[in-house]
Length: 137
Image 1 (cartoon, rainbow, N blue to C red):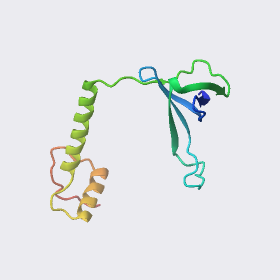
Image 2 (tube, rainbow, N blue to C red; image 1 turned 45 degrees about the vertical axis):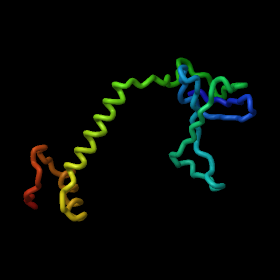
Image 3 (cartoon, rainbow, N blue to C red; image 1 turned 30 degrees about the vertical axis):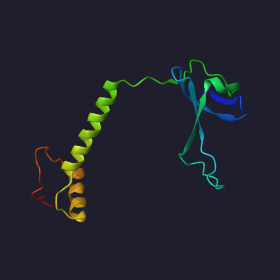
Image 4 (cartoon, helix red, strand yellow; image 1 turned 135 degrees about the horizontal axis):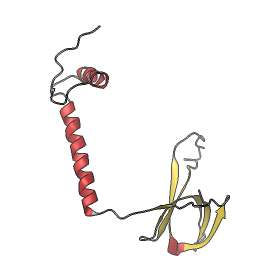
């Protein structure tokens, strides 16, 4: 991956791994390990990442750090169509309906947890709306 250090025309310095280049919006996104939060250093195993968005028109200088990798190409951002948004919305609505169907009406929290444990452990047919009983071996 290409590690970059970018200096903007205002003198800000951004450094990190090139994640996305969007030619339509004319931006690039750099990803770097998260820095300290409120003066407290984050452990190296922390999965937090800093994303830095830089407009291409504001770039003054770019320096590439690390060896050049043959064939490396950053992710090209693609426009999202209205049809894509409709599909995502329908999928999200379907997931919400499935979650609502899974929850019992008037069931205690403990009862729902037991049902969820059985549902993960045993195959329950989709048309089965109620768990009548389970033989314990």
